Structure formats: structure tokens, C-alpha cells
Amino acid sequence: QVQLMQSGSELKKPGASVKVSCEASGYTFTDYGMNWVRQAPGQGLEWMGWINTNTGNPTYGQGFTGRIVFSLDTSVSTAYLQISSLKAEDTAVYYCARKKLGDWYFDLWGRGTLVTVSS
Amino acid sequence: EIGMTQSPATLSVSPGERATLSCRASQSVSSNLAWYQHKPGQAPRLLIYGASTRATGIPARFSGSGSGTEFTLTISSLQSEDFAVYYCQQYNNWPRTFGQGTKVEIK
Image (spheres, chains in turn purple, orange):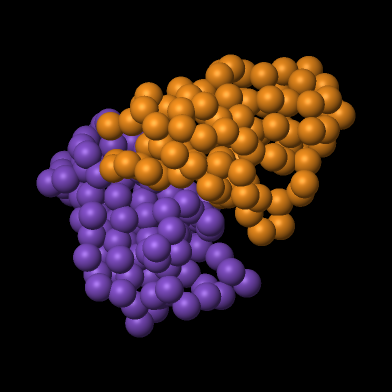
């Protein structure tokens, strides 16, 4: 079955770090790039950036540099989103979404991971 | 950054009726526009790409049109499973940007 399986909800304190995983199955992982999309409470979708699964090269969207790191483990077809120095405003649902290399729409999404930052 | 404005914010429609959703870009995005359906607790689903091409497995009642700055998603006869939030997204320019969504609710 073609799917993206994301890790479970996280509750973190301000200043901590979190690492969200997105495991791909049912397709060749390196045939598609992986994007990350944020949805803050009551807000719309915001593209955070993407990582090329062939080269491992990440591209970060505006406002998503410094505390955000995208990474891969191609041996287990998994992409990761790490956020450090968490702030309350990082509270959101984070989605991974694949795109064909060469295309730019997202044809498969994960169900999202809720990250809550609270003291 | 290209701003994407969706209207209306909420659309109340009876089952079987037609729904028309609009998306406007702050500058031309050519036909590089996608529509997604999102239900609570579920993964968003790609409906339309290239402004008018239905994604694999999407029913024919969903259609997209437009180019440049004005786009429309039409659901010809709403089914119960179509009540959801719909987002447009441009992928012509960096960064990729989404509209704020249109919630289609049961009237």
C-alpha cells in the first residue's frame, strides 16, 4: 500500500527539540522528493520546504531556516523533520507530503504529527 | 511571496447541489496550481494539478479551471463525503504557497 506513515503526537517543553519521522512505503522512496507542511491551530497550510531524496539536499522555505533541519535515512525510506529550541508558536500539525521529482504538486500526504509546545 | 486568496471562507451547500470555490493569486502562476481536499484527522488529498487535471482516482464531479491569477474548483453534485476544507496551492514561484482554505459545510 502506498502511504506515508508519520510518528505520533509529541508534547515538548519550550527550549527542547523534537524529531518527526515520515516513513514511506509502497513506492521507490528516491523517486519522489519529500516536503514538509505546517498547520498551526486554526490556520491554513504553510510550506516549510523539501528535501531531495536522491541527493539529500534540503531547501528551506522563508521563515524556516535556523531551527529546522530536514534529513533522510534512505535505508528505511524515512524522512525526518527536526525542530530545535522549540517555542510555543511551533505548536502545530506537521505533515510530510511527497512530490515527483520534476513536478511540484503533492500527490501523497501523511496524516500529520501534532507537536505541542507547552511548559 | 505570492499570496493566494480563497473565497468564500465557508460555503454552505445541500447534498446534490453544485459548489464553486475560487482561488486568486496575487500575481500570475500560469497553470501551476493544485487543489487539495482535507478532512479532520486525515491526510490531505490531491484533487487537481495543472489547474485542471484530475489526480488519479478523483471522481469526475471535481473539475478545475483557470489560469494566470483566477482559478475555480467546481464540485458538480456534492456528495456527503465531499464536505471538507479545500486548499489551493501555487507551485509557480518560491516559496510554494497555499490559500487559507474554503470550508464546504452541509446546508
